Length: 156
Image 1 (cartoon, rainbow, N blue to C red):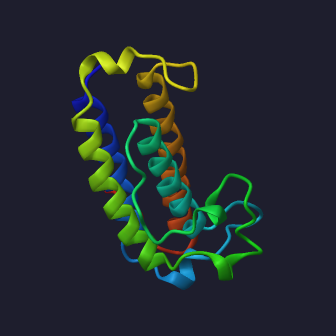
Image 2: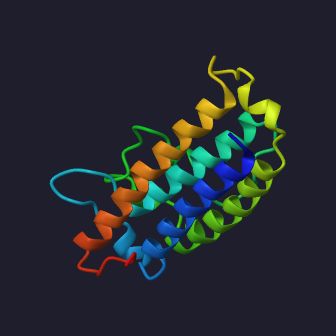
């Protein structure tokens, strides 16, 4: 397991998410899929929050960005609180910023650190693997919501 592996995986995730959000408006990002689910705005903010939290777990300073994290925590009611969510354009900018910082940090992780046990009582490699799974899960939701909005799939 190398930092290059994780950098590539999160790079793929970033590309897929970015393609799916590129032409989505702020108004569209707030539409809640029916009968249930979170809006695209909340999902993207949640991904940003998750990456920023991992930076902290990696011993790095969290990126100072405009996203209001308290609205993107797991269990936050995005459907009823959309006026407090960050604009989708700002989220797109924050996602680009966190991606650059996150991939840079991943590139600098020494190989031996991947097997060290973290604060979660799992190895860093396990934590990163879970974060990637979590992000891929939400990336799929974003792609599906895009289709529910009447858009063509962004990945061809």
